[in-house]
Length: 161
Image: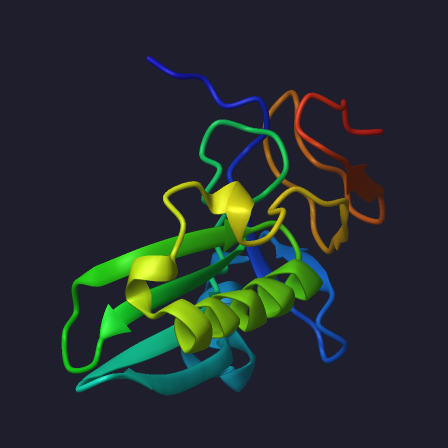
């Protein structure tokens, strides 16, 4: 069984696109359902006769799953009209997600879908420093504390809790 180093948290984006940990599940679910801030950028691009849909979103839940820097943003490429993804890139910060979206669009414009890399490191560096503040207490012996500023860096770098 895998034990998490930190409790699972839900996140929202504030008006300035800052990551805010939300420990109230009801508050988070209301924000997640109603906020237009979850959809960061979505656009279509043609490659010959085929059209592709590129979508960059705020996930709201940490997709790193086993600790470390929270992965909270994702860009996916789909064939238009299909739910099957052709490519996915995940990020730890808003600015990286927006740069990554632009880089993916550039690759598609210049080389088509065949130009998308197999290795996510080729498009944009998903590892960056991320900062957030807890808005309420969590339970447990290793719980996050409200009002505490947390900061993570590159993988393998300890948080400054």
